[in-house]
Length: 154
Length: 473
Image (tube, rainbow over all chains, first blue to last red; front, side, top):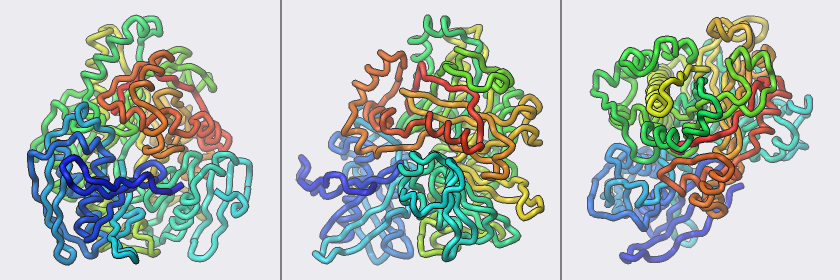
C-alpha cells in the first residue's frame, strides 16, 4: 500500500531547490523532504505539505510570516513545524511557497513566504487538518542525506 | 489482509485471537472480499488497540476499516475508567465529531428537476465551502465559549434553526461536560471565522433521491418514501477540532501514557489530569461540530427558501462518527459506564434505546452512511444485536480504495464534473483538483460496505440514496 510517488528533484523557476515527494497513506497522504541539512529537509517537507494543499508553482511569495516552535526531539519538532505552517495557513488564509528554517537543537525559527489563498488561481485541493506522528521519521541516511517525513491528515 | 491468520467465526465475523500483550481479542466485521482488501495496517493497529488498559470485550473493526492513526479508521473500542481505562486523541481523530446530518424535504422529484440548476447555485453560494472560506458569523471570545458550551442549542438560541431540530441530534445537540478553558487560544483563533463552513476533502453537501427502499416499515418511520428528496451534510468541527486534535496528540505523546512503543497510540488515563482536560476540550469541539452543522442547516433552508419557498426541511437525524462518548453497556454480567471510542464508526442504537427520541425509539437509530458524489449513500437502522456485537456501532462510509495521488493521476476534475452531469449529478466546486481526489472510483463500493453491516447484524439497510446535486468542500 505504501510506496513513494515520483520524487521532485529540480530547481524551480526562481532557482530554489525542489527535493521532496509524497507517499501513500490509506485515506490521507505522507510528505517527505530531503536535504543536506535537517533545516533543508524540513523546508522541503513543508513544500511537500503545500503541494498537498495547492499547486506550489502558482503561489507567490510577496508576504512573509515568522514562526517559532520547539519540541522534545527532532521528530516531534518536524510535527510541530508542519503544524505551525498549517496553523498560519488556517488563521491568515494564506498559502506559502518558500521556507527558510533555522534550528538550534530542538528549537526552530522560520520565515514563510507566501500570499493570500485564492482557491481557483492556486488550484487548491484540500485543507490540511494536522501533521501526525504516523510514519514519522527524521534521520540522516547512510549517504549523509537528511530525510524528514510524516503523514498529514487531510 | 492475509485471511489465514484470522479465525473465521462466521462469513462476516473474523477474529484475531489474543496473543502477546493483547488483553482482549480483535474482531473484524466484514465479508471475505472486504477483509482481503483491507490494509495489513488494520490488523496491526487493531491488535495494538487490544493491548490498551481497561479495554472491554474486544477491539472492533467495521466493514469500511482502513489504516488510521493509532486506531484504524472504522475502529471501535470501549474502556472502563475504573479498570485504568484510557482516552486517546488518535482514537477520536483530528476532525472531532465529524458526522452526517440528513434532512427530509417536501420537494417532489418533478419540482427538483425544474429547479435543479438554480438550487445548486443557491446552495453553492449560500454555504461556504473549500479552502480559506469563511462564514458570515464572527465569534468574539465570550461568544466562542458560549458556542463551545452550547453546541446546536447555542446555534438555535441565536436563530439558526428550530427548537424541534434538537430532538433528532445526538445528546439533543449539546455535549455536556465541555470545558472551553481546555481549548487552546490557537484553536479558538482558527475557528473565529469558520462557523457555518463545510470545509474541504471528503466533506460535502448533497441533495439526494431515495432510489431504493429495503425496509418499508423503518423507511416509513423515518419519513422516507420512494423518490423523496433528502439533503445530507457531511462535515465536522473545522479548524477548532483540528487544532484540539493537534494540541492533545502532542500532549499525549509528550506527557501522556504510551503502553507500546508506537507513538501514534499515545493516550492518557481517563482518570488523570490530562485525560480530563482532553475530555473537556473534545466535548467543546463536539459542540463546535454540532453548532456548525446546525448553522449549515439554517443556510440550506435559506437557499431552498430562495428557490422553492413552499418547501420545508425537517431533521431526520444527526450522527457523529469521530467520537468518544460515555455510554452504559453490559460487560461481564454487569452494566457499567464505558468510554466508547468510535473513529470513523457510527453509533447504531437499536429499538427501545432510552437515548432515542420518542419518534425513533420503536424503530431504532438512523445510521447515516456517506458515499461518493457519483454513486450512493445509505440510511441504515441500528439493531438490538449491535449492542452485544460492537457496543452499538456500525460503519460510517465507503472508505478510500486509492490514494489522492493515484486519483489525480487517473481522473481530471473538470471531465469528471461533465461526466457526472451527464449522469444527472450536478457538482458545484471551487476545486477541480479536489473533485479528482474525491473521484467515486477512488472509494470502495459503499454497497458492499452497507450490505456487510447488515449481514454482520450491526445495522439494517433502510434506504439507498443517489446524489442529484453535490456541493464539494
